[in-house]
Image 1 (tube, helix red, strand yellow):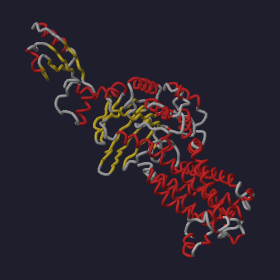
Image 2 (tube, chains in turn blue, red; image 1 turned 90 degrees about the horizontal axis):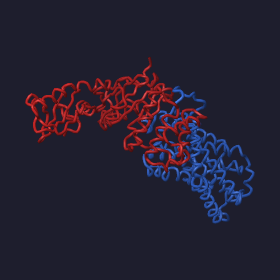
Image 3 (cartoon, rainbow over the protein chains, first blue to last red; image 1 turned 180 degrees about the vertical axis):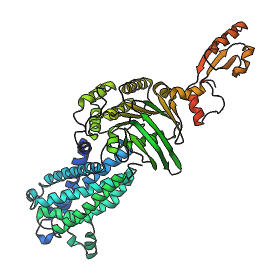
Length: 264
Length: 308
């Protein structure tokens, strides 16, 4: 060894953790990117084929397929952002390799940012994949009406689910606990958020319940970006989604900073 | 002078178990320090406190003068830990694993240093192999490499040779000794006494979360310093009867205070014309000290290695 002095750190330590997370999912890209795109396309194929002529959305101003595609894109973003953070953390926990970065000089913010952004990245990559593939069925979506909203809701929604994934990954000790979180919380909230239908077509009670589901606002706002029509004003959705995002940011950071289930 | 490692009254309880009980000691810069104790003594908990993996209920710990709780960025930069369990990330190759680890410490362009580490650990030909494909011993070497990749002045090895074959054990010893000679402070936890006896300057012994002994290797041994001679002969000279500690047929275990007494014993044997069939000298080692201090062995006269 030439010198026993510390190397001088030349960049933020969390960059590498983010890179590690991105490298991790790209290594298994078939499973983490290609598979969710195929799943979304199957939904699209079946639902649009069966329901195209039967369901009228936004008083017939929009075809059912055009209505469905943005919802499916957003659902893919959300599910994959969640899957990335939660599965990475639980794997590290079960295998025990979490100590590699727990022993490193990474701040709680760094830990938070690295995992959250990698989750958003995977969500966005899958979302773009679904969008490109879905153009075959709905070519009009090539030119979204208001791309700014797409970007805003896509990244905020991805961030929210990535953070929920961090919380779930930290909380779970075993894979089946994570599956519980996924099947009993994430999946119902996604499916009952108006991906496949407009909430206006629901009975009054469920219409009101839907408005308590934050996923509804993410998907409704995201859809507005593509179609220029939505169930409620995108500004209201943005305010609600922004607030949820802020609360979760603080909560997730606080859990990491406390070392919840990380440091004993 | 700054201590490389310092524990100040560190205590930690896990439910009913008092894992650490008021542990205080210092390790000077450049020392090769051994932390010994039976399984469950608190060794791993103690070093986990240094890395910030375990937070003490009370007390403080420092690495190169940096508090591991309040100044953790600086303390962790100066600390490299080789964990006891073999863990790895199955997504990456050996080189990627080391690059990532360097990156976690904010370092880039360290490929030359990584090559050097790979060379020293005999991993050069495995650099581009996936971690999954490596044998247990090879994975252990990578863990050592990961602990060194940021050139920490303090290196902690938690039972690095547990379950490792003899060849790798010797290679690791040689490498760690080399690092120590180059100025790194080494904290080694082990329950292989021979390992501690050969390598370490000072030794702390831990039992049930308490430090029961802490001294230089020689001082730790000296109160117990005596020599046992295993003599195989028809009988023992009359003047030596009182020194017999154990007797099985023609095999006698005789206690000497000093090596010089061996001469006296031999001349007594000669004088009485007793034929010696076999004679073995057995010295006190850490094992006996350890057993006495941790109370897991007999409180009686320490027995020589292999005497039972």
